[in-house]
Image 1 (cartoon, helix red, strand yellow):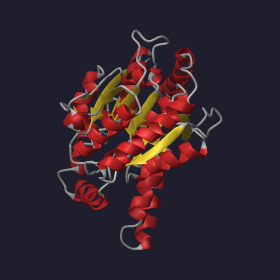
Image 2 (cartoon, rainbow, N blue to C red):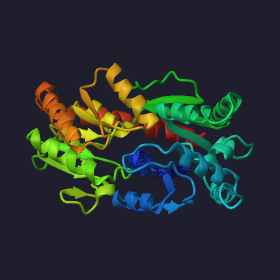
Image 3 (tube, one colour):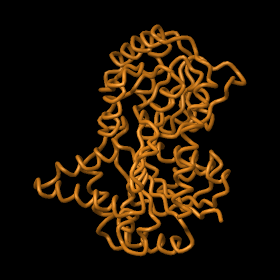
Image 4 (tube, helix red, strand yellow):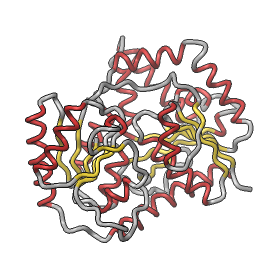
Length: 367
């Protein structure tokens, strides 16, 4: 009997949703029945562009950012506290989830939604919950609260998160560069971040720069300076960003962006797991737009350790300086990159990643 899966993907940025749509399609192709939930109307609309119909659980849990994707810690902490302790929020979501859990064989929490963290440690529910999260996101989550209040509070919070994760059915911790580990302990699997399958040969020439900025980027000065810097480097740009929808040369969502990126001369994005995975799998150089976002700062550091072909630029409000830095970094990356490799090789690597995820999730759903 095919498993019945409930997949909750938080809508912060879009990495969780991109991963969700890849895996939901693959799981359905493998025969599973999958229902999808998310945490914002915008996230629901994003998933619909990829052919996934989702329901909104509630809109009260979210990480807060400014228009340059810098994390607003105090605002985030307030939002989380209100979600946890106001009766009409997390408790209400738990009630909604409880009804759905009765009909599910497996519930996927991608990533760290508090309602499922809580439910995943309680008898009766925990045997169905699997937590999916990036290794760098887990570290960022714990370190964020370690600096709030007395040191004992930070330690207690870290202990609670650790206990919540490991009392659940299983955890799948992913990283853009880790290997598939079949020898992992049954309760903790480590997998490489899944990647979309690009066309082996594009239907039309792509080249240039494939730009993706998540919706937390909405500062118009950043968009204009980035576009000008790429033009100065002689690169045409395919620019995608919900925060710049309607702006000249930008589109909000492109379901085919990963295909553009796999065949581009250069990828431009914040250092999220998805973009770094595409750069690694399809062997493309990547220009990282780094902000005060702890998870992504950790990802950028790991890219440097792995000697992934990349450059880092930081937006500080100085448009002229940012434009020059983008132009110089883009030119260096394009000069250092090898000619476009056969995307068929990257496609095989991407398929291997997706197959590993589907195999693990189906096995967990059938136990």
